[in-house]
Image (tube, rainbow, N blue to C red; front, side, top):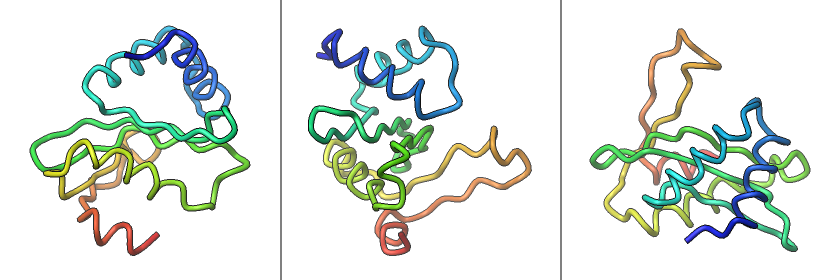
Length: 120
């Protein structure tokens, strides 16, 4: 169960570190993904430093967001988020990324999780 305090911390983090602007929309998304265990976050010293959301389709996880605090970017936090996440979904073998907003003309790419982790 997600406490109100944690929900507010996660919402504040996403608002401060991403392009999202709707506080209520962010809260709804976090609550929805928390219910089905498709939202992970990392904390350091009580501060949220990274958040990821995804949807699972069969053996593929479609990554919607990976938001990392500016201070921690480039420090390989994404593998840590994957480790937290895929402990919940051991049958997931592939990942793909939401690119429609940032790269509308790119084809979807699907990676084996093990191969992707070796690349980063």
